[in-house]
Length: 307
Image (cartoon, rainbow, N blue to C red; front, side, top):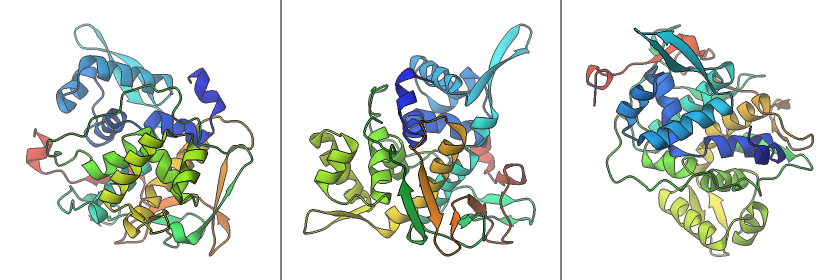
């Protein structure tokens, strides 16, 4: 773990690790296509070797991948997901579900639930009472040291330029990449879930430059994630509120897996049952929790064997 990140809350660390387009695509391909080698990601994603090497080094450093040797005529190395890395599965499925429902990607490969044999169409539920839940059903309390203001420091990567090319069938779409593929954007949405509404409050809470904040707010309005009010406020739309499913799994993973100072946690409570949030994904068809080993994406043959 980087020394600078030790001062951040667990959520701040998670945003610093995952708020990057290439990191998300590397993880997505590791789960969906079971890619484990440098050459496999290079050929699949078309990124430069220097960018890929830097991201993989970081993911190993954060304990999400581990290097493992294997023999293929000579000793080679592959990147295997650790237990910490495997814990990101629900987060990536939640991104897929949000894109299916809100980002005009009805033709995404369906997620099949082997337990019941139907398409899962997962939805967020409370692990305690198993009832469907949304951002409106929760109450959030911040610890005295819970802060996002230093998430942008140090700046590890340049912001990824928005791609002009149409995304492939299993690549994340521009909407989710605008939210998750940049640390400031992800942090801005997290602050909105915690009740921040006005420009000056976003700026003071996040320690973000006015020009950067103006740009991210404009993009979120264009995406339909925020709606701007006549009083200068910015409120989450239904599309933005639906992204809480992703946020819930990010918070859960971060606070389980990443060490952080005492008093820096968020406590999210499911108000109808009073339990602290333990997010689960349930299958729409059978109502049972979705386990990683019991689901699979039904990729089309053309997608499985090439673009």
